[in-house]
Amino acid sequence: MELKGKVALITGASSGIGEGVAKSLAAKGVKVGLAARNLSKLKSIEETIVQAGGEAFAFALDVTDVDSINAGVQLLKEKYGTINILVNNAGIMPASDVDTFKIQEWQDMVNININGVLNVAGAVLPTFIENHSGHVINLSSIAGRKLFKGLGVYCGTKHFVAAFSDIMRMELGKKHNIRVTSIQPGAVATNLFDHISDANYKEGMEGLRSQMTFLTPNDIANSMIYVLEAPNHVDVSEIFILPTDQE
Ligand code: NDP
Image (cartoon, rainbow, N blue to C red; front, side):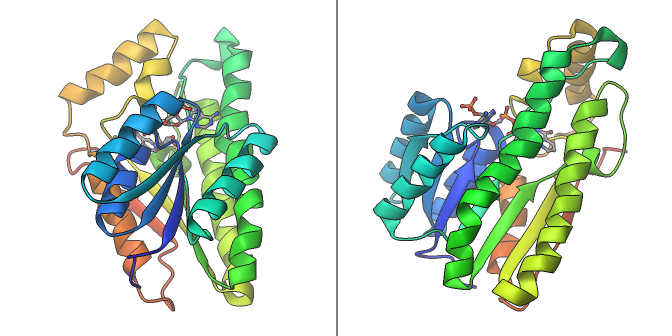
């Protein structure tokens, strides 16, 4: 599939994997819609992409707020005419043990990592159905295949994303010619650990950086380009991508 001229909506594009994917897709000629809450960061990424010769459009969007999603989708369609690719990437990972009862963090994870994916899919899929074409890439995780202490709720959300992706693929592929891919990375060098409020888990997670060579957002972007560029009759439904030295 030729990517040049396609339009992508990328959630969580203000840092980490989303930012890397936006830059890589833009370098392939994709017109990228940059969505997240921090508009000033998005604007500076937009500027970098445009200066490099790409096309990008930044707008504020909170994946937990359906009105802001609908407004963002509308803006992007007005700007570029349609949407061909959705990268459902926004997510958070505050780690803690169950018996510390960080209930707000559990709810935030469910709202962003699960409801956020559903909300954005719900807003974009009607366009894909109308076009009888489209590709959804959902960010699951190694935590969508394995369980880790301290990541109970996070693992639950990422198992959900993997399961829902495959159901989407089954229900949307044959009927609407929509491809769906779940990407399940191991450790990637991003800001994901910044929001861990539990000091022990934060230290433990940060310590992983010296134990293995983390993937880069660019590594994840390359895996996405592989699935997006595959011929239309090929749906790479899952990618499990790890640092070579991650067990
Ligand atoms: P970052 O913390 O660097 O990026 C997270 C992004 O999500 C930010 O752009 C943030 O933007 C956005 N975001 C958070 N909440 C919302 C919200 N309510 N609405 C819109 N955007 C939101 O982390 P990563 O790049 O690592 O994470 C990206 C995805 O990859 C996540 O789903 C994560 O679970 C997954 N993943 C990451 C791995 C890793 O090792 N890093 C491994 C496996 C999966 P803003 O704050 O501006 O809204």
